[in-house]
Length: 249
Ligand SMILES: Nc1ncnc2c1ncn2[C@@H]1O[C@H](COP(=O)(O)OP(=O)(O)O)[C@@H](O)[C@H]1O
Ligand SMILES: [Mg+2]
Image (cartoon, rainbow, N blue to C red; front, side, top):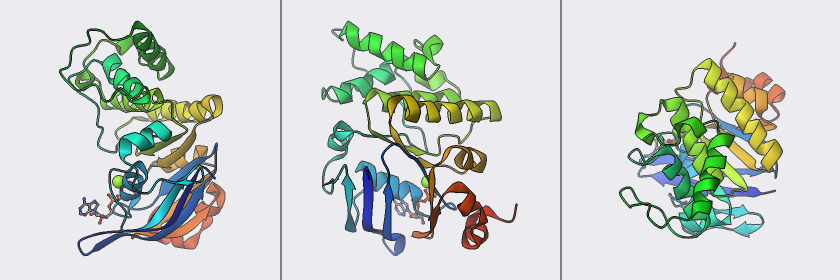
């Protein structure tokens, strides 16, 4: 198991966002985390990436507890993520956004908005281009990130995650705002990343065609609790998942 979530709980004031969550993600798997809005999916990704603290429980990454480890160190260990509400650097160029990921990997700290690019290693710039090519954004490399349509901004975030050379990528609703063609491309890209780069994927997503099409395993959250876990065909037939989330069709 590359990731183990053990008895994780989290409250916000009176809201119990996560109640004793237990599940594991196998190395090399595309593992989906699904459930209705407010179920606690983003909170769990925030806890795994370290930007939110759990109240109790433990998280193990490659058999080592990462409890208390700050986000940038988790990133250096190999945990990358994207955000439901896109967190790219809008005023940086597309390739500069990728550089921030490469810098993180190289432990040079974040490249902040506004810093000049003087003195940046040519080698890193070339690496940023090859990542952009991988996510099909090379032709946009010199545009300001804020000027890209949402579908391409999501690809850019995924590219920045890839730039940190991760072993696990947490994706928070990567298909939100994408049209059908973009979603299809994203689906192929996620599979390609797993197949070619052997990166494990934890995928939070509402597009059930995408989820059912590419996931090896699915964990279902509802009101902060795991209500089901299994392969796509089993999850689609599970009565409590149907009543809590999927509906009859
Ligand atoms: N920072 C926060 N402060 C207060 N409540 C929060 C915060 N983050 C999440 N919550 C609450 O925790 C619950 C789970 O939210 P979230 O993890 O965003 O769900 P999901 O991603 O599954 O839609 C919701 O009731 C939400 O309102
Ligand atoms: Mg969410």
